[in-house]
Image (tube, rainbow, N blue to C red; front, side, top):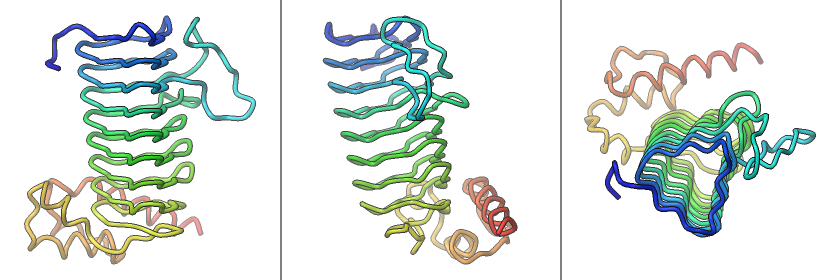
Length: 239
């Protein structure tokens, strides 16, 4: 649906009083959006999607945001995202839960409180994020992936199906297993970004090999690797 068009809202959908919509959104049957929620343009919400339910925190207040204002920190959703059947995103607790632009959340995918999803993120069916998880731009989490609270998954990462993410994962890497461990570069993603094959070794040295030399890494992919080095070294120092 083109930007600038009216929102299409099924009569069985429920939107709370603190829900703000952009334009061109499609909201299907039995969708429930509880505020405070801010939504951009041209998003698609399939039947039975839940956005803005109370944070998944034991003892947290439970306000009926589909009927009245709440005390929650809110959800912010960008534009051109797709939420398939029974996908869910819960309210922020410490800060807003955020979904960027162009995400694709398949059936029963769950984004818990205080998570941050970058742009172009894919969560396959039944992928589950615990609270305070960060997923970088273009990351792809496979079927049934589960992610421990406060984990960080770098931009362009791919996580194999039914993996259990218990620690931070590097950008531009394929990780899998229980617990999930990086195994190789995500060359598919690097190709999409236009990164030359000649630069792969420099990226692998940082993402997979424990290196810190970012001078040979292309500018377009350097920032996520800088953040990875900082987090990796910080975690090592804390041990």
